[in-house]
Image 1 (cartoon, rainbow, N blue to C red):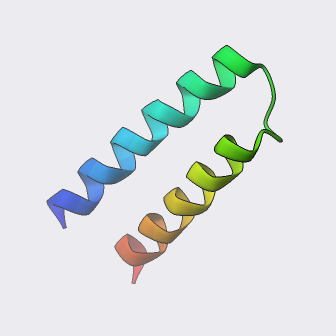
Image 2 (cartoon, one colour):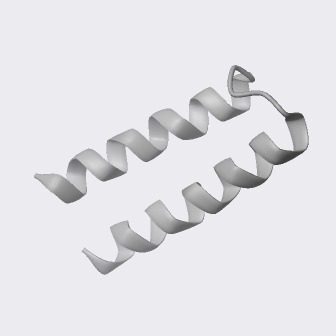
Image 3 (cartoon, rainbow, N blue to C red):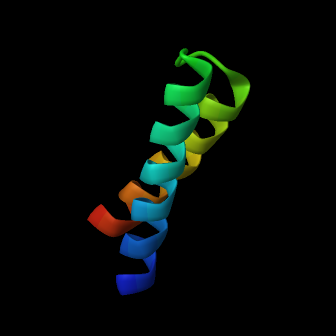
Length: 46
């Protein structure tokens, strides 16, 4: 599970950086990373 937690942390950091740089939550890159993050969180919670 540690690798999944690491992936979640990396994606959260990346998501935060992109939102700060682009200034919007609706950017396609933000949406895709958010979806990846949702999948990993779902795996972690199962």
